[in-house]
Length: 60
Image 1 (cartoon, rainbow, N blue to C red):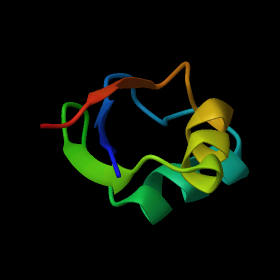
Image 2 (cartoon, helix red, strand yellow):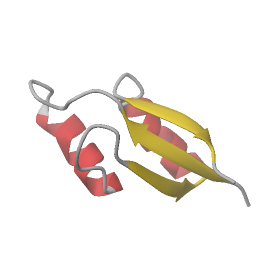
Image 3 (cartoon, rainbow, N blue to C red):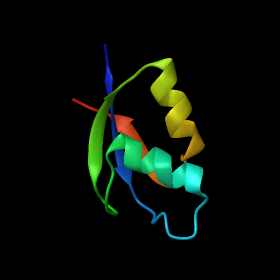
Image 4 (cartoon, one colour):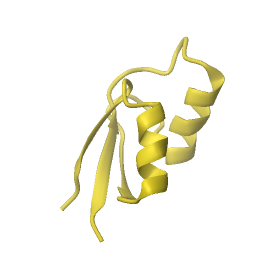
C-alpha cells in the first residue's frame, strides 16, 4: 500500500480548534514538519479538512 508525505506549510495560528486538533493528531508540530501516513480513505478525509495548510506528495 502506498504512503503519503504530509508537510505543514502554513501556521495554525488563528485557525479553528478542530483544524488545530487535526494537525496535532497527525503529529505535525511546526511549519515545514513532515509525517508519512498510510494512503487510505480515512487519512485522505483528514487531509482534506486541512488541505489549505499542508502539502501532500507520495512517499517513497
